Amino acid sequence: MQKNSKKVTAILLGAGHRGADAYASYALQYPEELTFVGVAEPRKERREEFKLAHNIEDKYAVESWEELLAFPRLADLVLICTQDHMHMEPMAKAMELGYDILVEKPISPVKEELVDLKEKTENYEGMISVCHVLRYSPFFRKIKEIIDAGTVGELMNIQHMESIGFWHMAHSFVRGNWRNTAESSPICLAKTCHDFDILLWLTGKKCLRVSSFGSRKLFREEMAPEGAPKRCTDGCPHRSTCPFFAPKFYLEHPKAIVDGFRKVVTMDETTEGLMEALKTGPYGRCVYACDNDVCDHQIVNMDMEDGLTISFTLSAFTNECERTITIQGSKGEIHGWMEDDKIVVTDFVTGNKTIHKLNTPKVGHSGSDASMMQELVSLIATGRQKENVSNATQAIDSHLIAFAAEESRLANGKVVEL
Ligand SMILES: NC(=O)c1ccc[n+]([C@@H]2O[C@H](COP(=O)([O-])OP(=O)(O)OC[C@H]3O[C@@H](n4cnc5c(N)ncnc54)[C@H](O)[C@@H]3O)[C@@H](O)[C@H]2O)c1
Image (cartoon, rainbow, N blue to C red; front, side, top):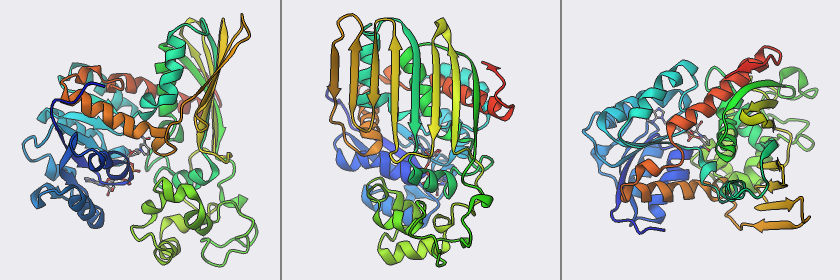
């Protein structure tokens, strides 16, 4: 890798789970490459924690993105890590100020806004990169290398599965931030725009039309077992048989600790602090008594250019949170298991199987979050922003597939042309 010629400076809008923990932590690990000089975050505890950790001057640790972007440009890069509905306005302001931009997905949950944005992003001088972190994962990079080398010949058919994990579903899409379409976006945008994006990137082909089916089948009031109270902490009689019993997940599940789910529930991660937050906050609610409406399983059929077909499935009802993919070509096939870090390529002519084991980290989307930060910082430091592999113009295409899939699902699976 090219050595960075300068230290990159950045500001953060939204010091939440993604902004502070997944991305800005890179600056604490590699202070010689990246430093944060400003933060906007309304939650005082999170703002103070970030200010102290990154040694930010008081005047640049403010409550809202509007205040921070009211200053003349303060840094090379702005990270926009606010919630789904709050990306477009700060992005427009950051473009006026000439920042390089890293914006969280979905760029916007409003289709019309994205269509308008496409032309502006194409003509923007600086970098607008979208946090489609899978493009930086060693796993999908290896698969792309195999496809591009022609190893499996012409692409014919792909099966791609997004296993959400029953515990991740309960945390994020039943009790948490992405449970409700009106407040955030449909799950096939909030979660699955990553998958549509990676499929576009891997195949290099456009999607022509889609159809989709799916529903919220389990996480509904009428599915609650008899006598279940509104909160797990109110003496639930099903505590030992329910997979979604909140205290068990937040106190015991390794992912709750490693992937930072606990910190989303409360800044006080002691047993007492967590139990108090579960008694009073959204994450202690019974999964059958939440204001959620997003699907818990959905399938999307994609008809691609050149006769390639893709079937995609997302499901809450899996033990692991992972992605698996099967790619069938004219000369061979690829099977990949992201969480196991394993890719098997079979050659139809020789029958030979090549096994790739990648040994990537088990955190941060299998190492993708840190790889993305490393690559973007290096591109900015060396003035190669235009080489960024996840630009907004391409990301918008993945979002448009998600909107089409949701339109189809709501219309009983009618085919929607793109
Ligand atoms: N790329 C990925 O893999 C991935 C994964 C999860 C979530 N996301 C996306 O990342 C974004 C952030 O998600 P998160 O989990 O970090 O959520 P979060 O709620 O933890 O963080 C958002 C932060 O924005 C802050 N905020 C609210 N109003 C603000 C304002 N006016 N100015 C500045 N900050 C403000 C909130 O207080 C909060 O701390 C969402 O759009 C989400 O969909 C992306």
